[in-house]
Length: 428
Ligand code: UGA
View 1 (cartoon, protein in one colour):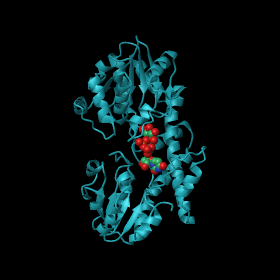
View 2: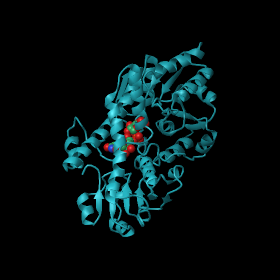
View 3: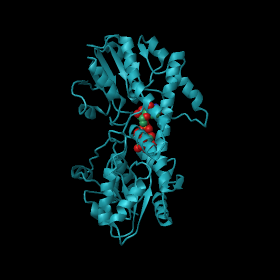
View 4: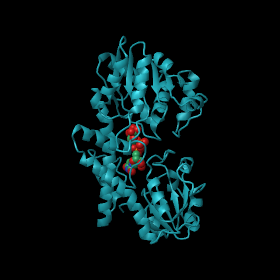
């Protein structure tokens, strides 16, 4: 099949490389010529394990191409995936102007039947707008609109694409359904066929449910702290119930990233527009915000005053195995500490370059031991595997006083006490 993917961000690029891997010819389009130039030369602008190799393989096979010329790519393809950004606006709404602009451009150059697929995360009813936008310009050729949301996690996106729990296709014609099924035929995952609006809601409802699980366990963590119980044990105890499931029950400093915060506020917004006050999700957002504030309070409770103290930050990215700092809890936490006069020594295995674009007043370190040097406390903000494997005796020797505030519950409280640390974590 001949596919074209408009937008070469995380979703567009991973999907493009994976579609090429399963046998399709794919043209990835982006208006950023510099990015296209780099991609054409095998330079990958994002950190995603395995992506560089896959892009290289696709380029060598001749099935993966990159261009900034949308019109030719659209004409040369049967199916056009729209994977441009839908960033949040100040009021929480998703900004759909890039989606609209791309649809207008597609409609101006289409000269034969095409399927236009919404791949970007969009609020319900966007499909209707896409259809209307296309109809305004297209008169002589037929087209179909499809919603095919993605469920890729950063860090494991290739596996998520190749072995998805399900593939969701929101579609209105048999012709388009047959073609979409053909595209995904090499993957053996279950396919859920729905109408377009239901597919759009599946994406928002799925991400919101996962965020809800996180805020739920964080609320339980607070109760555990008050009652002197252990949230890790509670999570294990409820997670074994198959109806609940063990995943996304990790208490901590809350969710971040380019998806959950944006999608939850966009879902609250569209629900409101449709006439439903989504109080449940508003509580999810609020609990998430409180988790960040609480970790700063925990630090204050141990150090008393923060002015002129030195704190080592281990982990800046919003989760491990990515350099992505969008909406990372670390941003709020470091900003708060800076406001209170704390000197920050930070280390992250991948996100330092991105962090440098946010702060220049902090000391960036080459490893965790260097970050611990001369510190009154260290804070774990991302659960990178290498932090779990640290020589903690060595860490302790670097510090002025042995205080660890663990925002991701990566160490055992009993072991930390034995090692002589003042150890504070979440819900334990
Ligand atoms: C999320 C979804 O998991 C994907 O299915 C979806 O496709 C993607 O959003 C998207 O909409 O594009 P992602 O943002 O990459 O993927 O990250 P997750 O692994 O879901 O983690 C999100 C946040 O939740 C992270 O900050 C993580 O630290 C936090 N989290 C996760 C917890 O605090 N506790 C948990 O138990 C799980």
